[in-house]
Image 1 (cartoon, one colour):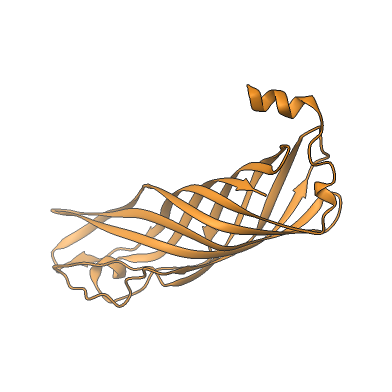
Image 2: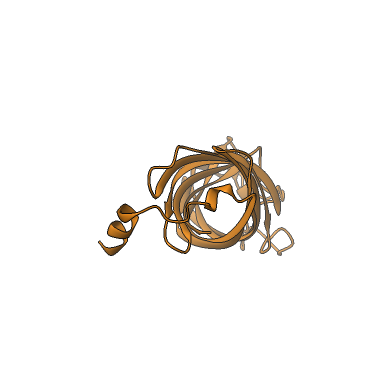
Length: 217
């Protein structure tokens, strides 16, 4: 209630959007999944793969913001570095057995985004944002030992994708606060093909992410 009163009372940071360059940080919660395209194959020559599905878990992230003003309604935004922790399970359903394989990632992300802002109304602005993203998995398991008895499914360390979302800029007396929702998708096949049934039974894996961020600038 206090914040709502302060936002409605009088304009805050009236010269803020005239700055050419400003900085901030972001706190994020995410929910990661993997888009999976399977293909027909057999397990040990006797058991057929029925389905592979991805299970999502909540994750967190923390990063830096650099914002360049392009005009009254446009900004160019660099989100780097952003460290994101993402967890997903893959469930392989064969005819006679089920296997669950965990994929945990610690990404160092960088995003270059174009931000379009609405006209400011007192202490609020709506905006949409879209751009390109590169991610490097600091905890990649591509070098980990694996076997039929101890299966490992890995994603390649370096991936690229696109992201888009929307948010709300809220101007307070000393800072700007922006809640934002964003969807991030990966280009192409991000799976590391190791020759075992758990990767050879899949044609393509593409990580996906839904992220809710709180920006402080």
